[in-house]
Length: 580
Image (tube, rainbow, N blue to C red; front, side, top):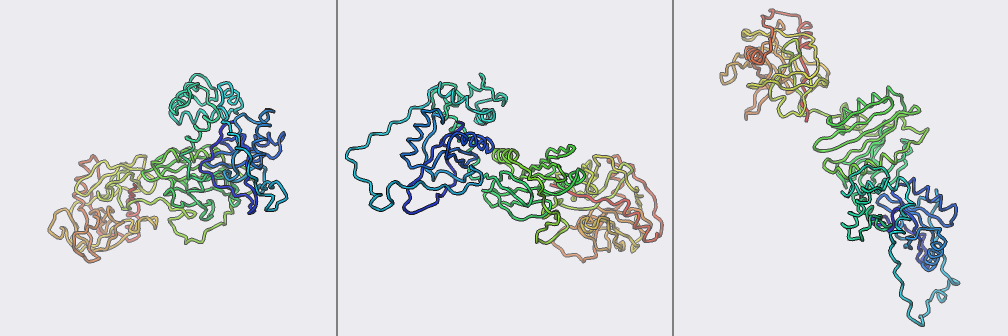
């Protein structure tokens, strides 16, 4: 017997009640930490015994019990069956109210309460006054070492591995999980016995094993791990129903949202028709979601993938596989810093995951929530902290942008895909180096002399945060070659700019760079909407060359057709995103 007496935390199983019915009792004979093992053992006992039942005991355990009986019948049956060697020696009698949901026999209803003895009248139920005091109940002796070894021999390989895992978790076992009870495992058992004030023998009795597993499973108290069969997704698995609950279905996900017991916890069931190409597309899409942070292991094989993402707030694990024209899997999201519960819940979900063949979530399934461009199947797409603009400085793909646009960034991307790092910064300017090859579509020409006042200029930038997919060109004029307080190296523009334009190039009428848009600063004064500022190109050139960038200098043409100017602007302007 792998575990006995471990019933703490189980939901009360309510008997089919009648006001006059007597209490029911069961003989618990075995318990296992895996439902499949418990079902197999229940089936084996049912082949030679009657009244075999299987119950969920809570805390991830499943018990096998005989009954129901009256208390006297249960005690008599237990002794008789023990003498015949039909049940383990440590089987014990337990009240029915200690049992939860019944899993065996399959599809069975409520247990029928045993009928009271007598004719059912009130007089027949009266218990006569005993003539003599009842004999004291004799405490059953603990297992001897020999008995403990015999009960240990009945353990399956899975049970023995689970025992080593529990000893390892408790800090007593450091060896391999191999189901072999050698010197290392025996030493760990002895250490556990000593730490828990048991007789040190190196062989755990049935009740000592139960105590070890009770301690091991205590971390799952309140998780409400239950097998859920979701026929929308065609998936059955154990889900922590104590912390998540069904929220909505939106292809390809069935959403189980947090209940509040564990903030940030959520479960997604993944289900959609498709092939390997669909699977690979899902793999890419998942990595854009806010629930899959960028840091973490990624692995994609021919027919499956796993994704782990973690940051200071959450840890998520996603796995999916394609088979028989259907992609199925799940995602578990858990708060960071709660690794023991997360890993244990994840292991249970992985072990219990089952595909229901022939059932897949309808691709047309949509929630009633408002659709948005930054949502995928009801999930928030990961968004950058800030979005700004920049422009190529040379043929190597290095990019100039505003220093403020890349402050305190955990990660910087160029045009959404290319990672970049700040390699130089000075006086509001920053130089970015792409971390993978990036070929500029064009390289700008820097015009170092100041254009004449009131000449036409244009700023190029991602005014709307990249939503449009291309930079916007906004036209205006050069209002002054100095700042409002006469600062050198600053140009004042008569043009309306937006925060997303910061870091973008300012072009003259011939397409040459004459400056870089500076971020709008709050200095306690309200400026007109059509007032913007730019860092002068002479300062940009000096900064770039000081950082080892050979920029192209020249003079812009006097005039260029608007469509040609737009083409140059789009070729040199880069979307700069700052991420956590």
